[in-house]
Image (tube, rainbow, N blue to C red; front, side, top):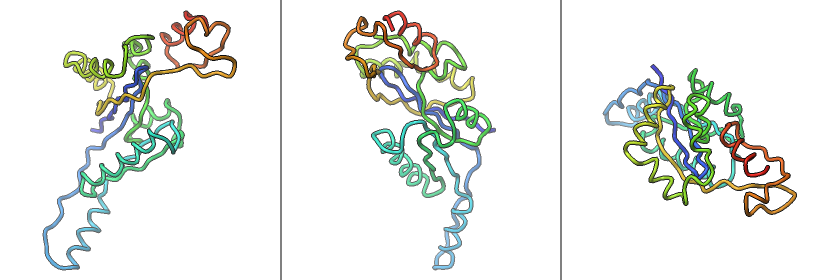
Length: 210
């Protein structure tokens, strides 16, 4: 049975990375001496190599992409070449909805998304959309690493077919627009803001005047 893996990407306005992992295992390498045996072993490993498709919406350059590429190197290194990651940035394999579907049917093994994206499966994840929930990223990481909180989040993720494999803090959400600088909630008055599909995030933005 195939289970999906979620690498939770935590930002102060929380985000998530998701992944799916197959249950198939590569056969153990045969231990023989000689050039011919070595070539046969390499061919056997390549033939049974597990490909991990990592589908994300962010672009192919930048801090997140650099981290993804490094992750690919570690996957191949730590599996002694039995696993290989294929990186698909910029929604090449589809948007987040399509990616979740891919995780469910096993065509995609791993992805990254906001923690609030899991509110599509359980609305409790919308709590991560509350503004000013934490004072800084360290506090946010400490919250999700608390044993009781961690157990609850991992249990719900697994109940929905996912496995959390990591949390990452990539900073706080900010407001970007072409009309004026936003330093306080009052500065949002009159602005139309595009946000994630989460009711609490949308209601919070509206409550601040946008």
